[in-house]
Structure formats: structure tokens, C-alpha cells
Amino acid sequence: MKTMTKKISRKTPPSQSAQMVETIYGCKWSLTVYKLLAEGINRPGEMVRNVEGLTTKVLNQCLKRNTEFGILERISYNEVPPRVEYEVTELGAKFLKILDGLEALQFEIEQQQPDTNNE
Image (cartoon, rainbow, N blue to C red; front, side):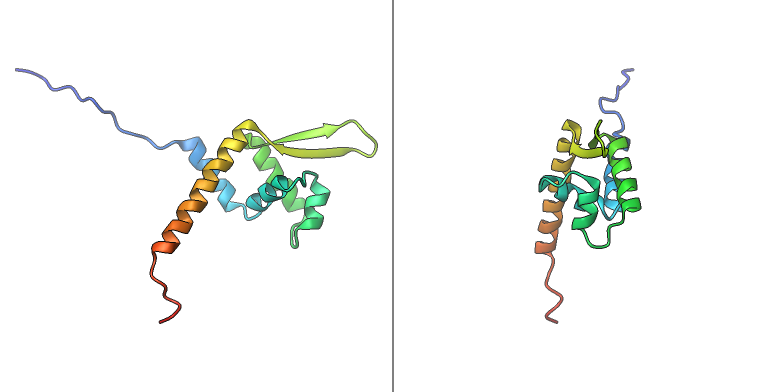
């Protein structure tokens, strides 16, 4: 009697990257921070001044979370007064491409849905 061997094992979701996406989309300011960085605004004080409703406390939490994930890098300069800047890491650039893909997918989904506003 021949025994059949299974060729494919159960596929499991990518837990760390899925958690990153969930956490980043759960933070209402992360996407705004990425946009600021893309526009060359990389200092926290400048970020707070450029976004209505963004507080220093919330921004610091957002920046810390993104730094812990490895999406952003914190650069401290040994100056008086102290200067801190943030930049997107190599991993962060890859992650932002994924977020861009999700945004494009969302746009496509919205385009396929019937317009319910005219009814």
C-alpha cells in the first residue's frame, strides 16, 4: 500500500508585517508624518507647526512607534539647542511602497462600487 505525502503545508500569515500595517493604519497621524517627510519636513517642531490638530505628545508617540518598527530613523545632532530629525529607513521605503499599493487597491475598489450618492 502506497502512502501519499502532502506536498503543501498550511500557509500562515506574515504576523510582524501585518501587525505593522494594522498599527500604522490605526495611528491616524502616521500617514501624515510620511507625507511631511516626503515634502522634506523632518523635524518634529516643524511637523507640529504644519499640521492642524497634531500635538507634540501625539507626534512623539507616533514617531517612537515608527522608529521601533524600523520604518523611521531618529537622528540626534550634538548641538545647542539640540536638533532631532527623522528620515525613512531602507525598510521604511519598502513598507511605504506596500502602503501605496494598499491605497491604489482601495481606489480601485471604490471605483468598482456603484455610486449610491445619486439615488
